[in-house]
Image 1: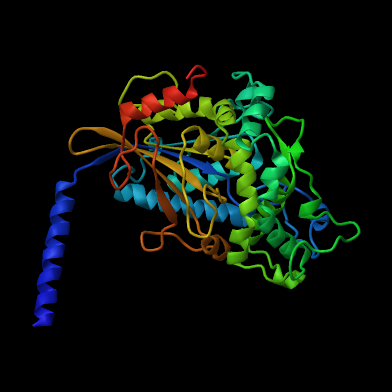
Image 2: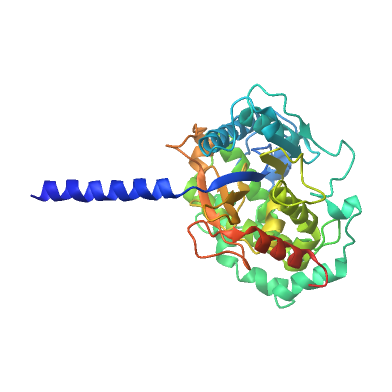
Length: 421
């Protein structure tokens, strides 16, 4: 009797699911993938990094900041996953080369990432990776240097200071537990703070404060110190490097996740502060808006031709962080800190035409897990990357994908990118 009841319940559930699928006639019309570059080599030399740790650091075979061979493969696997997914959604068709358009910032790692994406998204197609050209500043990534935005450095510093009560020292002191944990990992003692060691730089030796330079509101202190070091940890881990063989103890995924806290605190303060985010990401937001509108509404400056159905933009973690701060978008993936952007992590903007005729924007953040990166896991529908739907403040709705009507998305972008808003 129980078995029969289960069969009936299962049949009803299947019939309901089939009916729902048949009635759901939403059409995917346009996709913009704003991706961080893939796994790169450390930005600092091993010798410099070894001043911040008790154990040696892995060596990379490519110059500082370049995409690694594994990094290229991992990006290609993300691209192949996107291709499979969007073919299944009816957006892409095999051999339709004009459907994919790629743009990248002018660094080796972003261009190489763009090439890996293009080859995977449109296999057999001669999809070029477009840039502004070597030696130039791209307004989408560096609007201040490109001269299209005038930054008020004093106001940027004031905006950041205002978020921490004008007291960076007190703000940093609130992260002492996380600093102690990172210090114990780097200096390989039982509990931080570890004793000072000649020739070594500890997390606690970095003094909180503002620093002059190209950053709108650059900060120093344990968080900034940790930001660069833990990014190097992440890149080497994702590149499959053997830390245990170099004498490191206690480095696993759980420890890595905890170690990212200080990096995210620094990124949030430095890049997601509203004035800073608007200065750095306002132009990019306008271009993404024009691109998701392309084909549905006349506009002046989409990224790529109107017939392109999928536009992939290869940028940096700061690119995504500042855009996330501007649009007040938040995300969390298992194994990472809130709003963290791993190598190949991406904000994906999709324009759908619902069965009721309304065009909506659906956003998600997606990327490979720490295990998928380190193990170079092939991705497909059964083994997808991590993903989280993203709610856009001011236009998101109480639907499973947080649908934002296209016209409402435009209103949100116009509001947050205008200096007088």
